Image: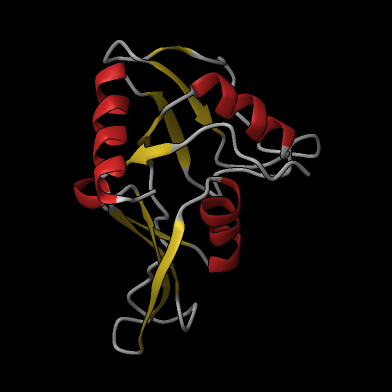
Length: 164
């Protein structure tokens, strides 16, 4: 398994993702997509055990909560629904797709194409299959090619703050 990732996730808006086993979510978000562990939160009252991971630096640093219920039968049900889909800025979409496919990640049909906003996009399928067992763990994930100005702003800020 190749460990050097040839792309970067530049940022997302805050999201919370739920599943019955946060370990599968952590494998996707930390091991494959490269977000960084930041902390943990557990609350019996909220029925949640979550790992907090982050993407980006400074104002680009965004929290992503990987949640599982403490009691799968209890409420609130932090894993239902998991989420529909959301977009991630990627600095090199083609490299990301090639590398992730090599890791066993399944993509939705259609490949890389122009999205509604005019950027190249592709989607990580919410479910794995025999050929590509890794997936979005129940969530459709849109990877969006970041335009030059987003990449440049990220690089300038990350360099200036010593982040990423």
